[in-house]
Length: 314
Ligand SMILES: CC(C)(COP(=O)(O)OP(=O)(O)OC[C@H]1O[C@@H](n2cnc3c(N)ncnc32)[C@H](O)[C@@H]1OP(=O)(O)O)[C@@H](O)C(=O)NCCC(=O)NCCS
Image 1 (cartoon, helix red, strand yellow):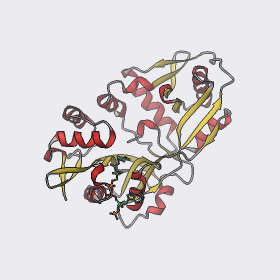
Image 2: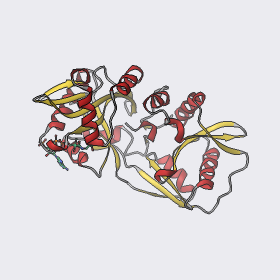
Image 3: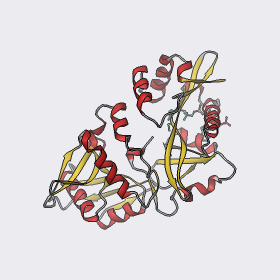
């Protein structure tokens, strides 16, 4: 097995592997666009396992800033991991992930992380490679009884000019947390480069016409709200009430709650918080100075300080 970079293989072979593994893939033009802007990708963009001219597995390595008990640091991130279904179980994904770990070490990164689901084959593969869960991911629901939108508050769609406001609100809310608190200022811009309609799920929360929060909503996926970011508790309550007023089924749902402060806020509004549900973020240490068993604590997962909102999914 040889390890190749995106530029060393036929882009169509990468596309084919993506489609057979995930049902969709990025074509060369999209890869070029993302590479030109998004600073979280490495120079080589993606690594592939090649055997006898066939492209059999893929890893897209990223470098991501996080905050741990050690301060702000950069970790490696594994995205778009897959192997051709015809060779599952033959160690191509494992060997390619190990090669990616070597690359991370070369770059001076001490930890590798990934987001996945405990429901899929990959979870067992990552666990066998030593990865551990960093924190429980929870959901919340509430039967909606109060449907009145609070006075003085409103929601509106997000415009490109809101990106810096969203970033400021996010930084304020996550100031005392650990984990994915170090979102790059241009993260939403990069999201739009990846997916043109990326901002459609975001809403700005207005109080007397001023932006005091933002959230995401995906009603077509059964998710009333996620990533409700409003630093002031009163604005947070109003944002939730506004979304409840819109809940189509009479039940409001919240996705991806990781931080204890968010659990507390939703519970105080009558929500039942449940979990852990299958989505998870895992990590492994790449150096002997850090024990993998200590990573959940370092990332705040054992103290309720871990935060990762859907914008920071990778
Ligand atoms: C997840 C995926 C990449 C795994 O690929 P794979 O080629 O089967 O992985 P490997 O053969 O390298 O498996 C690595 C090891 O884990 C073992 N393993 C496989 N499934 C396992 C499981 N459910 N539990 C425990 N171990 C498992 C393998 O036996 C292998 O052992 P070895 O290292 O001793 O040889 C592949 O199933 C895939 O592409 N899935 C679809 C896309 C996807 O879901 N990607 C993950 C997104 S997060």
